[in-house]
Image 1 (tube, rainbow, N blue to C red):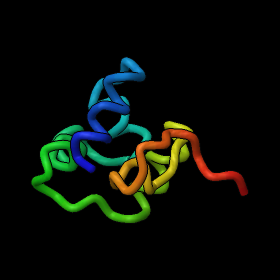
Image 2: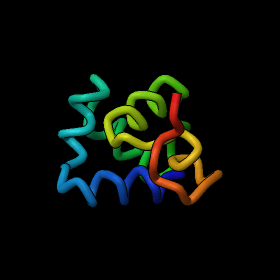
Image 3: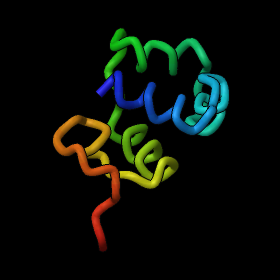
Amino acid sequence: MYRRIRELREDNDLLQKDIAEILNCTQVAYSRYELGQRDVPSEVLIILAKHYNTSVDYILGLTDEKKPYKR
């Protein structure tokens, strides 16, 4: 999961501080998510999935399909 959130951020040419602003947290807190030093709350996973237009399952590594599920 931690690798995936970093790859998604980098693939979108964003900095940690950019995502931290979206999540309303500090850059240090977000950095700890990417490094696996801090568990990512489910609310944060949902925000990230919506922002990157993917699924929480993709972020968690349960699927390699980036497309979000159809509702």
